[in-house]
Length: 304
Image 1 (cartoon, rainbow, N blue to C red):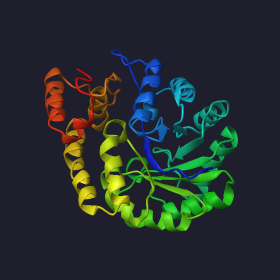
Image 2: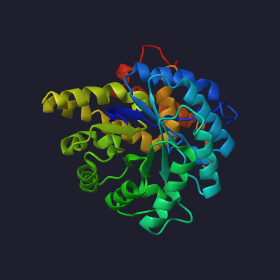
Image 3: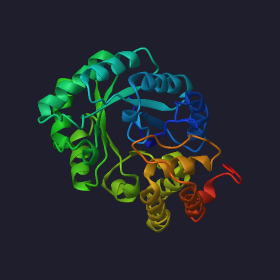
Image 4: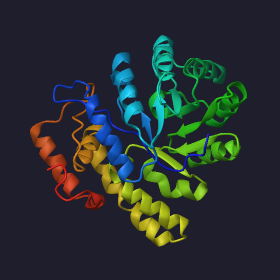
């Protein structure tokens, strides 16, 4: 497969006011991401509330993205608590316009060895027939296996192994994965807020949630770094910490969906176990978003 570069967004899944899946809103989200310079999507991951959906809902989301993706590179997360659900999702993906599938370790009964995780990934690779990605996110999965060791084992065992989405605040670990994978697999950086140091160690594509609404900021940062203008790259990078404060304060999914709304897209709110925000909290969130410099890129009047 061709090497991925640039931004891969982890899109939110749209729900209506009653919390039901609103898959009909996905085509507009796809066009928005294309228009803001995003190259691909990582669907039904953490930001997409994949594990808060039923298997049938995840399949409907996959179908909608398959039909709407246009030029976007589509990677579909298949991670599940039950191997039967993983296989069902993988077989369903085999009939769609999916460019790759991803597996994240289950977080309840966790794989305790590299071999166990490789076996699990093999189910997805065989059933889907698609290039396979490892979704490495130890803070949420609770699985702290060495990412380089896992990638080496996947590369040896699975001809379709494509690469890793590395989501951990561990630049040294990422650099090891990146160096080991050179010419053998691709290594995407998954911590948006640390894009600048990740660029410095060699990252060339990035997978994250904030690219849904702040892609222009990150693209300017990348262009400045590539041009050798570190002062400009740092200026863009300094726009990101205030955004993280808003996400941490109000919840990454609740706040993220409201940020997307500023671009004119209603994706609803987060599902349980996220608590719904009260009216006063929503008003406070809107004021916090108003204060973010990076939202200067959003169309005037969008989301109003």
